[in-house]
Image 1 (cartoon, rainbow, N blue to C red):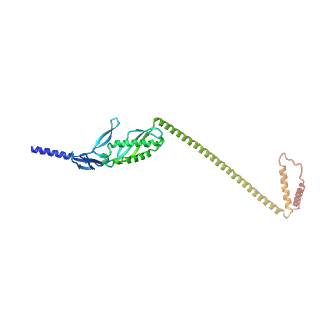
Image 2 (image 1 turned 90 degrees about the vertical axis):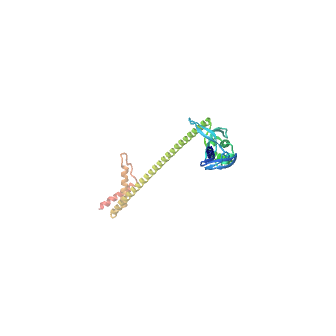
Amino acid sequence: MEFTFLIIVLVALIAFVAKGIIIVQQQEAVVIQRFGQYLKILSAGIHWIVPIIDAPRPMLKIEKNKTLSGEVYSVVKYSPRIDLRETVYDFPRQNVITKDNVTISINALLYFQIIDAKRAIYSIENLPEAIEKLTQTNLRNLVGQLALDETLVSRDIINDKLREILDKATDKWGVKVNRVELQDIVPPASIQQAMEKEKKAEQDRRATILEAEGIKKSAILTAEGEKMAAINKAEGEKQAEILRAEGVAQARIIEADAEKEAIARIIGALADKGKPDQYLIAMKYLETMTAITNGANNKVVYMPYEATGILSSVDGIKQMFDKN
């Protein structure tokens, strides 16, 4: 009888000791109360508390689960363990009115982390709901100060301002808000259609401008090409005229040199026989007369007055040769 009693006592003692053993995982914390009053916080490791006298203070948590069809639903429950890791909270989509009275739908993500387990337990009754309502309220205030166009292009600014406000407000709860992300901003269907039409009109306008600029550049290039072709042609004709003129000048110089040489030889040959100047004049006159009488319709009806002098020169030439 005594042996059975000892076994029962030993089993009860083991059960009592085992019930007081608490193993805390890494990045977790457990708040311990003694007779309902805060006692201590258990960090990662193995701990022992006095059963019945000491007990963990549970914290409200929201867990998201999926059904077989893929739908997401939330489950609210109390847990004695406080997760110190960064937590992602997906807020349900909500309607927000902009400054220009346009109702838009916004879905936001909040990344926060509990840095003080004691304040997270004792400073707020429902931490997830408090963070959600605080985020929704401040999001409405921020978007209400912006027009629709500003809201669509100022997502980063809204994220930074909202994070700053939430971080400051949740500090007394022992929570650090790290990031706030607006997943998507959905305007009404009528606004979306108007925006699509505006975007298409803008694209058409840019295409027309690009086409006009292309035609303009093509015309400019064509004109410049024609201009350069005309310049090159004129330059070529100029060079050709210069070369022709230089050729004529060279031919005249060569002809003059040849005539000079011929005259010099004639003068040398006639130096001892008479007057070379009379001979040259007579020869030039005869050449001119020959040129005048050439042609079928040319008729000589008069003799120049000076012809008698020229003929006398010719007669003198004849006499010079007769002397020989």
